[in-house]
Amino acid sequence: MAKKTKKIETPIDQRETFVSIQKSFADSDLSVEEKLKTLYALQQADTEIDKILQLRGELPLEVENLENEIAELKARSAAITAKIDEVTKAIAENKHNIVECEAQIEKYRSQLENVANSREYDSLNKEIENQDLLRQIAEKNISEGKETVAERKADLEAMKEKISVKNDDLKAKKQELATIVESTAKEEEKLREAREACAAKIDARTMSAYERIRSSCHNHLAVVSVFNGDSCGGCFNTIPPQRLIDIASNKKMIVCEYCGRILVNPDFE
Image (tube, rainbow, N blue to C red; front, side, top):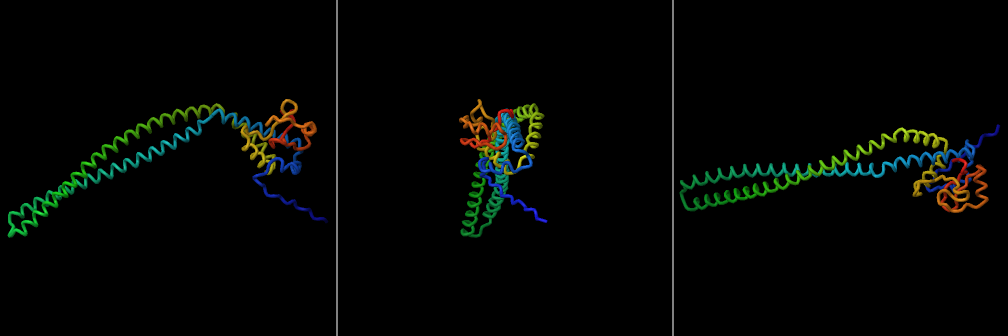
């Protein structure tokens, strides 16, 4: 008994187009006509889905951008709050340092009353000067710290106001988007189910080429019918008579020689 020859599958090349798979197109459980009809139905479903997505316009992107802006503003607010806490802590430490400096000054002054010689007297006065200088530095730090806190609090209030405005915008955009999505949800679900049903019938190689052509065309049309009797429905260039006959026969894949789209019988519409 002769052994069955196992067919070797060639790996899918992401650069493949319909031109490169024309010869293997008929190699399927579906007839060429059924396969062409399925591809056209897939294209029709995708076109209708595109229209729904177009209806939503820039709203999804605007919502995403607003969410990112709000997240960034909140991060900046958190950084400002952390800075305020840091400076407030430094102010408290400087106040504590002033108290210690004053205590040291008072101690050295009391010791001045019992000095035994001029050397000890000069040494105590030097310590008093040092402590007084440290107190002045602490007072300056407190003053600068209070200014910084006031500035940062003003920045924080401005940031909170911005966040509030952005949140209002986000709420309005989300509501608008939700209204559009809700109004088209059932239709989109049916279209996506139809799309999946068509895609399930098409081999991976053809689907890969279909997706590639769709993504490269400005109108996302990879499969088009004959326009006005003799033109490509994608690029509108004239189709040679023999190709028109082949298209009408539904027996082979015909690709537009100008734009690379699959051309199908206008009767499919």
